[in-house]
Length: 266
Image (cartoon, rainbow, N blue to C red; front, side, top):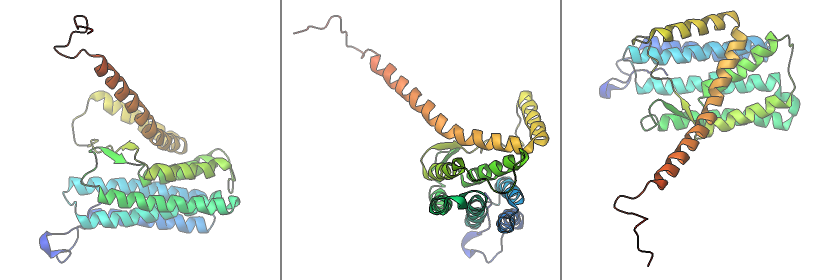
């Protein structure tokens, strides 16, 4: 996420860092472009706008950390931009593309997605200094927005046209809304610093993934987004199984100084 500038006790009097906030503004513009495209019935362009906004949203945070321009102003500005680009824009897009056919349940789903996204952003800002390092508490709103966009891009890639009126879309929006306000842990990928040394095989994997993304962007964006969303619940299940096994193993360990074979039954 981007960071603005609060220098000492002078607040904004000394100005703001231009570069990270300019990137955040680009993400905000992409969200507005998506909303305008949805209004005009260009759902594919609207989906592309959301994906571009997500790329810029990920870039501004890294630029801020690399240039040591991380400040409270940037956090707040980034959250406002995220609410538009990944809250309002995908909710409006999903409603125009598919949810409007379901009447009341459709607009309720779109609004639920929006309000859960807003709550997710507010909770993130409150817990930013106390959250587990390297983990997100709940599905990040950009990931949810990219998945909505990826569904539409894949739909048009497979030859679809116009809207798509299917119950699966309605159910998906409700699930995304729930995941955003849940306590399920998702990887934050904060440790993927591009300037650090990595094993050679890591470079090969990233090159291979980049080639796949360039060859089939619509398919790979959907696969990446879906895999990330599934990784949260699957990780929770795996962790629960591990904790249960560890607890069971510890309960079977003999207590030091306690010999059950020589214990007097009386």
